[in-house]
Image 1 (cartoon, rainbow, N blue to C red):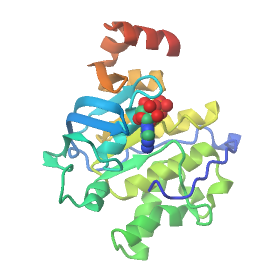
Image 2 (image 1 turned 135 degrees about the vertical axis):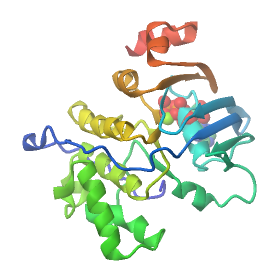
Image 3 (image 1 turned 120 degrees about the horizontal axis):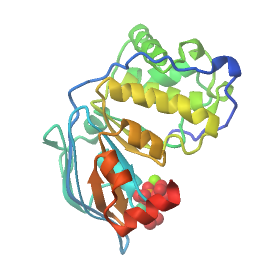
Length: 273
Ligand SMILES: Nc1ncnc2c1ncn2[C@@H]1O[C@H](COP(=O)(O)OP(=O)(O)OP(=O)(O)O)[C@@H](O)[C@H]1O
Ligand SMILES: [Mg+2]
């Protein structure tokens, strides 16, 4: 999905649309989707940006990853969905190794939904077509069935009435919710989010976080890289603090935010809170 065209115009949400998201608890593959990352290393040239990462995410768990710029958060997500090959270590989804030779990368990716900072919707297609295209082309689902699924997922994110709009007619927050609906339509076992609210105007952030909160309540396994510390505190089961390619601390939101142990985390929190 990374090679979809970039489209990130920022329109204001119309006031009639707020509060937009009376989201039903979103359906997913609740109970599936555990992740196990073991000793993952990644180098770019001479620079080791992941220095032996261990991470476990249980089915239905929400793990938020925080940390300074350049600490390796995005690279870790990209290794988990095989957009990057690790130089060492292993990744398992539901106890099945997805790293290593001979693994069908497309099959792996179809089990994961990933949402990026830039929503990467096709600008020339309607919202409905954006959500159905992978269902039809990757999963080979009929047009009618794909549209039924897409409308259900758009309803989940509070955008049923935007099915026939083009991305440019939507606010950034709405476009990001379409991107989430598109990922959910594929019925992923887990969802990876990489700073999905960072490009949004502040007043649009809440609608997207509400969708993610409801997804979490619905039992979706989620790994969320975020700068939204309030969201991490409220929604995460566990928070992981990364710095310089390592997991420095991990624990409950209360442990990390109220009782940080390392100087590095204390310094980071002093800067972001
Ligand atoms: N394709 C690449 N080629 C070379 N270096 C890269 C590449 N991708 C990432 N890096 C480097 O790896 C390090 C970790 O990058 P990464 O994007 O994972 O950090 P991050 O924690 O997500 O940062 P941010 O909070 O700014 O998004 C950085 O030093 C970055 O410059
Ligand atoms: Mg990043």
